[in-house]
Image 1 (cartoon, helix red, strand yellow):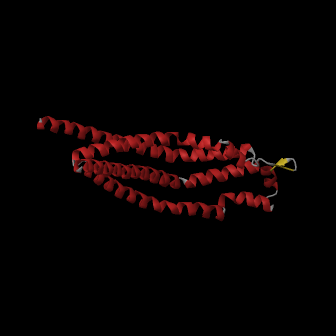
Image 2 (spheres, helix red, strand yellow; image 1 turned 90 degrees about the vertical axis):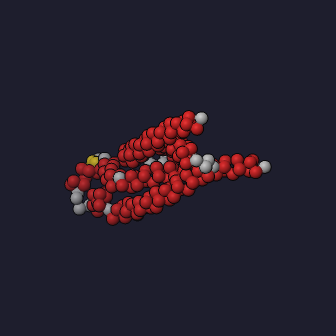
Image 3 (cartoon, helix red, strand yellow; image 1 turned 90 degrees about the horizontal axis):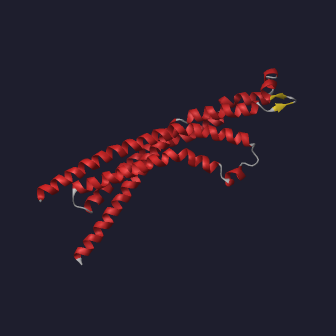
Length: 228
């Protein structure tokens, strides 16, 4: 009975440990992705403003485009509002509010580090071998990091698929399709940089821990031969 109870406790300890470690990896990758995305917000703001100005300028007014009309009537209040899109305090404030969340990524990474050490401790308690625990944890991190790389590699396609769903089309039915497509392209272009950076980080983490796992596995086999 005691032996069975020990096995059950070890199993739960390892399971809890891997849950913490998996959570830590997810938290680190998404914190990095969030930080990178927010860090690139100025590029998004500029692209959106230019896109909106372009779309508005191409509209016709009394037989001529808004752009041509505003060149002739610079004092028109509507023209002033269009030209002020690139320096709008409300838009700047909205983007600054989003940037404020960047500071939370440090807390997320700190929480991930705590989860990692807690996870390693529980995995160790489930094996009572530093070498075995190190191998299992390293191999698990490598696999999850590579899975994370696959996810972030396909993230732009996932976002594009969501934007093409009937539900989204229904929500934007009153907006001209060319405007929706333009904004979609701007967002997809903006997100490429943080996606690429997080993809590379996932590969680096996966590669490092895969090498560590291989080294620890070789060491395990060496010690097993010695004991025999």
